[in-house]
Length: 222
Ligand SMILES: Cc1cc2nc3c(=O)[nH]c(=O)nc-3n(C[C@H](O)[C@H](O)[C@H](O)COP(=O)(O)OP(=O)(O)OC[C@H]3O[C@@H](n4cnc5c(N)ncnc54)[C@H](O)[C@@H]3O)c2cc1C
Figure (cartoon, rainbow, N blue to C red):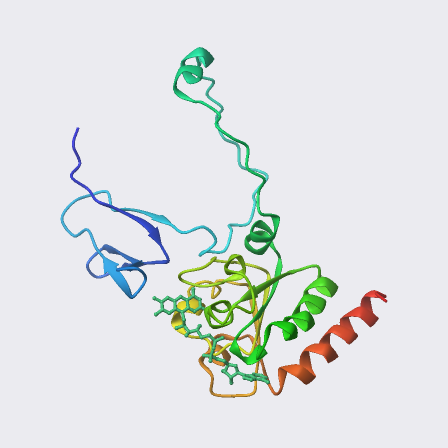
């Protein structure tokens, strides 16, 4: 049966227009330069896939049971179609950023690559990973594998700490589903402060080391 339905892949946001009963599917288009809203008004079902980590994970419910259907599978068939060319070691840093419960990110406010050491130290004290805005990556202060945002990684940690990041929309789409957002910025009106659960107005070079010292003391880390 042909459904004639569309599929919008890699969405960064989904919402339902209740009046028109339409699923509005938002995703970056034209190399990330615009956010396109795509709808499928005439055919059903309406289908979309979402980018990894743009939505918080559902709580696990151990009472739910699925039916296991065992299908017979001829392994020889797979052997004919699949050939292992090479094993590539996974970039642990990149994976850690996407999987980390705590992400400490730095933006242009970090001023230079050496200053990222204070974020490394805070992340280490918290058992988290270091992220970055595109401005820091484009400045060559930190590798691209740390970039959070529309053209970088999407993260959904329990805590996201943005240091010296203004909160451009392209950055926000990569981290706004974090459970708790802490922003450290000397500009109280920076957009990141509006999405933050805790907005700390001040100089990150004073606040971050103080935070690290406090966490180390609480955790008994030397
Ligand atoms: C197609 C496209 C894709 C993009 N993709 C991404 C992406 O994936 N990720 C991304 O991050 N951006 C992306 N961008 C770029 C984005 O638009 C912003 O330019 C970028 O996020 C800005 O980075 P920033 O916040 O670090 O720098 P800025 O906007 O310059 O902000 C620096 C902030 O630091 C604060 N600050 C400075 N000094 C201190 C201090 N001592 N203490 C405290 N605060 C201080 C300032 O008040 C300011 O708010 C994209 C842009 C385009 C056009």
